[in-house]
Image (cartoon, rainbow, N blue to C red):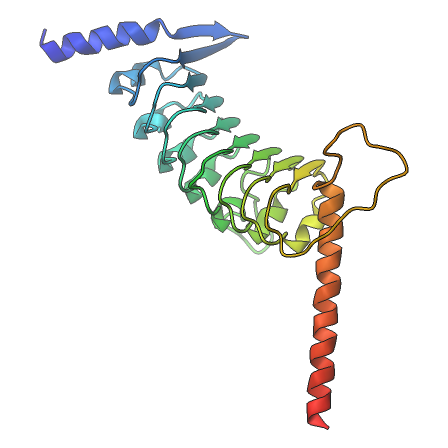
Length: 263
């Protein structure tokens, strides 16, 4: 056997040691070891249902990730990953994609192909400044009578401590979203249609440079949670109402000025 073949065997044996069954799932678990890249021979383990790879210095998700059609959970948090490869959108059974504390710079539209995705965590990716509209919008293959919302099962979205400057207007299409964490970004506004997101139970806009200053009135009783809804759902509703009032007031002033000039 060549040196390369022996090396592959050694890596394969090392990887086999990282496989374990947890709660009935076959899990690849690598923690606090040096794996800046994942070897091609990993493709021999496509039956794996969950990747748990943390603090390894991993810099790249391999393109062959699409071969892991049984993946339910892909947890690569606390690494050095800078990009989400397009083939990840072929993982139609994936329920959880956890990429917090990495160096993700952008989110590909292809991610919308993960039709079973329920939880997406992208917190603390300091170079992430925008989300593409197409990830959250309706399927391109629309008919006159039917349109499918992409990633319609998504219920939890963590986006805190990034550089997001705006939210896609069509985030409102994610009607099953119950948790949306947006604290410590660079958001200047809240899309008005978000008030129609009836299932949204927890949302946090804390530490964003929002263009309007809105303060909730204190309740008669102190809330149990310190954060209360200070920058949560109640705050969001009030902010949207205030923005609408100001827009109407501005429009009325503009109309009055126009009328004055026409006389």
